[in-house]
Length: 254
Image 1 (tube, rainbow, N blue to C red):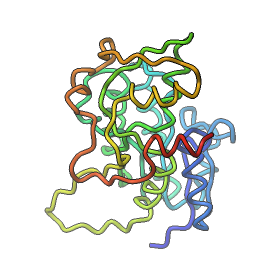
Image 2 (cartoon, one colour; image 1 turned 135 degrees about the vertical axis):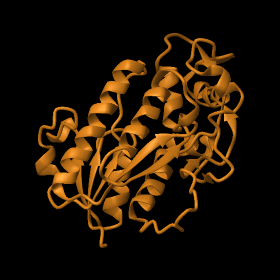
Image 3 (cartoon, rainbow, N blue to C red; image 1 turned 30 degrees about the vertical axis):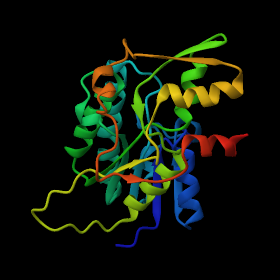
Image 4 (cartoon, one colour; image 1 turned 90 degrees about the vertical axis):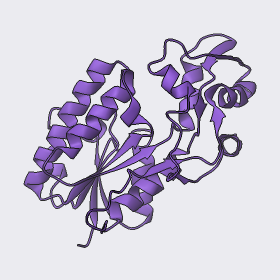
């Protein structure tokens, strides 16, 4: 099957912008689906028209807050609509970005994302999942959430990855013919950065440039902090490690 036309759900978001860039650079037709472009994957507005002659949907749409119930409802509706409208349009499959360790999650946004994976996999269209580590860009968000000259950031282990690196891997997965040996279990592919560090360590690098003192804390109050502290959200042995370290990425930003 020749794959020429992609629809990107969440095309104007943090990851979506990079996915659109990668697809465009590689010469593919791209339909950008977001409320900003008049396509709403929750209400269905503009969705049928957007998916006309589309071969593959890349789903990087996300809920804007961490509240579990609202995020779950968002993902439940988006999964249903992408399958329903996609099947009617003759889309071949859906490729979706998820989060490393999501299968272990019990609460919060990660638990909602776990349900998202399950719902997508139970739909009529074939689905491919790429689980990514937390993005480099997330560190700035953590600092933005706190006011003042001191920020209290969880000293939880992570292996931060650049959005651009995730986008390249996601597009590669979407294009992969995906011929596997029958009966052979294939682990969900993962992408992470090259260096293990804590969120607090990464935040301190950025904080130093912003004039903010970063204090590492134990992460209590964060959903599944104990699982995170034990390395539950670090990449698996089969994960691909790629892209710049957080320090290298930061150096290109200033």
